[in-house]
Length: 134
Image 1: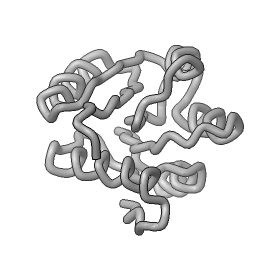
Image 2: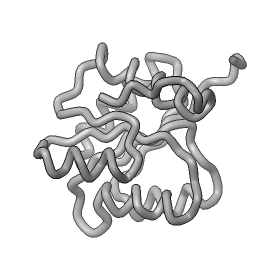
Image 3: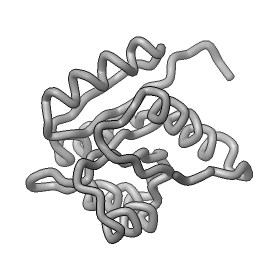
Image 4: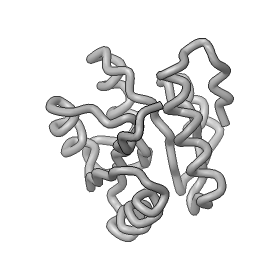
């Protein structure tokens, strides 16, 4: 592993969640880009890809499901950690079937989120390892 900080993109329509996650992830040593919509993230990802995406599912206009589908359709292999405040078995199944490495309920604890991000990144950099989907 290099000394270069990993870049994490966080997509959530709640500004308070974005601010809290930005602080948490920066304190953990990550570089962080935040986006208030799926559409703004998809425009930015065309120019540079993060090492991991922390993605809310239920957002107006472009949902997290649509973001996941777009990434898959475009062939981008960005590990996704889903966070949601509206947890249902259907949403969990759909997010995981669209390729999410981990599915977490809000509010998400630091002790759960940081290892989930590390595992998601490892699943792409070491594809033969067990991703340990949550």
